[in-house]
Length: 419
Image (cartoon, rainbow, N blue to C red; front, top):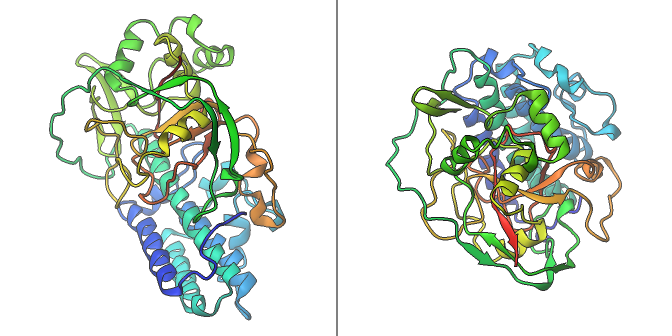
């Protein structure tokens, strides 16, 4: 893992960040019962209890086990249960069977977290810089799992016939429909993209390199629920001419007629969220759509999806701390645009780019080298973060990736066009 941090990170600052990240994860599961935290709704999702334990196993394994002399594992059964995909760390429980682990119970996992937290904080002042870099990586890794935790809880609750809410709905102030999409002319010619080495980055964001951009423009906002409803009304899911072949086969096979969690009633379209089922907000960004749906909508709209290079070149001029991102435990949902271009928060934006290595990318030795490189096949890049991304986790070079059919994350659409 290529992790760029200060050569000698301040132990006190790192301890504060570590404690904050770890506390947010626990706060996110506070409304859940032991049964809620144990169930697994599909193969792509993991139980909340597993997320709590896996992020702890990561720290116990790569920091405490490897750098703290005399450290004894909390429970020698846990590496098998809570390893995710690290082949170098040996055998592990099958991903699609994580919901079968009814024991250890939720309170035991929380005790495991408390034990590892105390051990990390006690060891931190005397750890070498390499171990502190791994704690930094562990914090960013946990923030990724915080977003997955939120979206996995949402998917789980959506399977319940009574559609329970996890958090009460926040008070909403009516917002006018955003203006018609405007266009931001992008830079043409040679552009530099990729992480510049200043601060933390995941390995897939590097190395920084030159790429050629043709004349193009990007939409100044993402597509709204109201615009998506018009796509549906115009036969968007019934007309094959806008769809990629694999996408059309997916629509027919899975009987897809709308974004995930949408249902049509006599009163119109509704959506299920962490605050229960409610009418869609036509002014809010559409979310929970797959790459196939995003590409079909772009075709229907007479546009296309941006490349990740186009997106990054444009987004670099904007503040990655801005926009609707997750600041605390509670309901998260895309919100109507307050006006003006924004590139971070609300919904992850599908690009037309494949998740492949940048020129000069190298997978480093060791288990953490398995973090991203081995997934660079068959997946599509998303950019910009979402309402469930912890604030401070993002940057313009950040590359997220999912398979083209997946849509349980907060995924949406920004259009692009050639000039």
